[in-house]
Image (cartoon, rainbow, N blue to C red; front, side, top):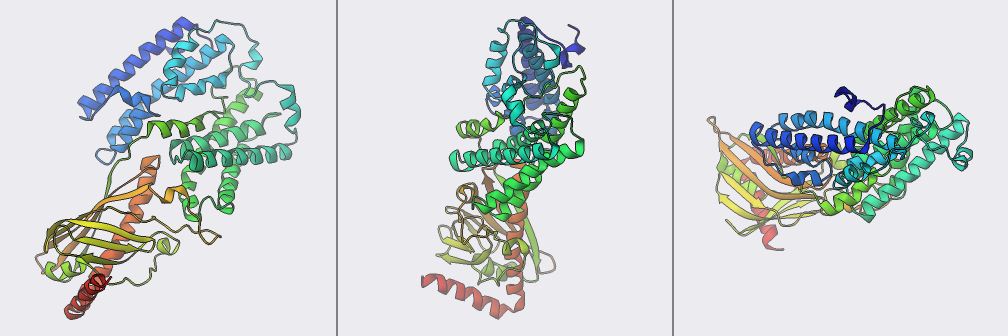
Length: 479
């Protein structure tokens, strides 16, 4: 076999060649990952990353806030090996006369090492060439069950795919309580792929039809989750961009597969696997328990007053008027007031939100420069916007946690104060970087609501601002 043949999807490979190429590629990949991480970017690296779904890349993505070039480099290095591994796996399965959908095991941590050993032991067999690119097995009962009409097959594909999506969504959220790669990446991709392959079972379909069939089940699934009180409108809208994009990608792949089959092109439909086993990422993430990163959000404002006066409002501020921002009116938790019990390090501050109080023991009291606190209790991050009175999705509890916060006051030359608020937080939802963008936006909006209120209270008049700060402290002492 020539070197370029290794990356081609056509042809067959024997077990010995498959094992040799697999071990050699893994050794080279491991050496490259170690060298790039250790010497190129001075990052921690361990072979244990390979035991997690997309382990090395997930770790590098978590470091993107330090250096965006790191995850990009790791991804570019990984892509040729992913292509090589899939191509060799498809050719080995074809040579062994096994179903091509077995290649989905290539993506599973731990199992992919077993695949290398087990698939290499399969004996070579002959197989009619016309079946090699078929996206579905030639099973007569299935043939009769799937309608031949375009419209009827489309309705079946959309309805069945949406039902499978609901089943897997319930399994992931309510059963395994995993809001990760399985739910937000693998599931929409597989649903898009599955729906197109089902729709094109009896004949070729156009690209426009395939994309429409891949997207509609996702939209229906979102509507059903809202109707059955599993999720609220805000969470569905936040998840929609990544879900729709991945469904389109899955549908595009399905279109390419059915085009290769019905066009009678003698090339392999290498991912005619309809990777339905990928939702097993739910259980993998549940047992692997990837550790979330800690993110930092900073927001600042200039106040027309010296730090000594601003400090009084930072420690405890009176009730903020009802929000006008659409994000808060839609249900995202927003700050109402801040109260404090005690003085100095060890005092307990309560920042009361619309969903409950954050409990914040003071760890640094450097008046009037720095107020830092830890967070020992987090309320729900939102009240779900839903047709029902109230719902409690699992992600409202324990999936977003604020760990620490601070207010930094910097005296400016013109007698003003630069007031900077910082929050350190983590969330247990993946892809981490995608939800990190949403979280940063929400936390920045919360910061600015508090900072603008402090600025307004301090600048109205020194006497009134001091009176309101004293009233807030009296209110807390009488509780």
